[in-house]
Image (cartoon, rainbow, N blue to C red):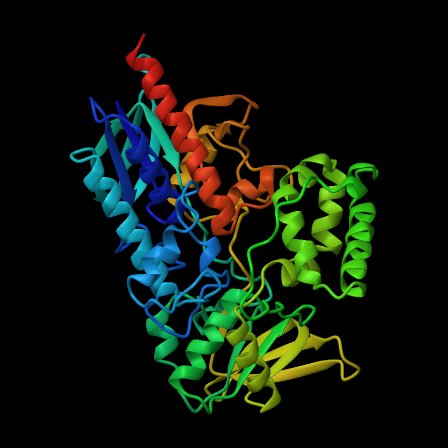
Length: 460
């Protein structure tokens, strides 16, 4: 049997690892497809910049759900001073993922096929029930099971920028373009989440004196972890929330009360969020669609800055940069942009009493976050599957519609035969699906299902 995994970043590589660790090699072939340079690293872990740190302590970053200390043990072979509370460079984690995939491959030899290519189309043969995967060069392979492990899609170009200035709007992962910017000219970073902070640190490393403007609609920055954090305690589903009506207002009020109680007793607000994390998916699914939409409109930015935190040293670095005036933080949205005298003039409607403000910059780095609206994603495979009705977006445009077995839902609402998805667009169903602790669980669960299917077919 052939299993094809399209996408060789974290989710795809970990699904392959799960299959290789559990399956017998008889008549099994796993094809891992990716058009990038390295399997396992994806966008998140390919950068070699030592200033880009993981935003989760090492003790919670094992790639193997059944071996929670695996990453820490790997690090301690590099330096015995690393521990579960260490925040280490992302490049180390990319190395670790490559190591984990290679170890699984050695344990189950002659099964994994790595293919550097781009899949552009997927058709189901009605008679054989096998999928035909077509690649950019016209070649194709067939597989009995297909896993779409599509990661983050590049941010959509905001409509506030007219076509004549789009050459001034750069993507955060275009390192060659970032590094080629005039070091003497100011730069604007649009978006103040983790990607925006990564870009800021790269710009500052290349030219410490360069003026950088960071702006977003609300001007919010992620909070930082505590130094030397401990893994969260495992607690039962909160009784306080279980008795509440399923509304985001009721849940938010309860969480605020829980945090206030924790702080009043000498604790830390982060612990209240950490202990809630294993139950967030259940809370999300308990909300009706209208309440989920209300959360996205009113609460999401505040949830994100508390839930997705920075490494402590990065938090300290930001405070220095803002305090020294080397980076200016602005709450505002783009009204217009035009070129003048070799610069891009960006007019912002700010939330301050000053009203509109014009920034003169060499470029704007678009760090507004991944694009999950499938209708606007440029990936050929996604567009082909949409046209064929093989996939559909969820009602809130958060990602792909899937069932509890990770099977994709088609345009008619039917679960696909042997076509699965794993990756960050699972947040449409599970919400918590963008960080390693959750994604490794999803990848492991899907791998176990695929291995179970293999065993069932073999014994028929």
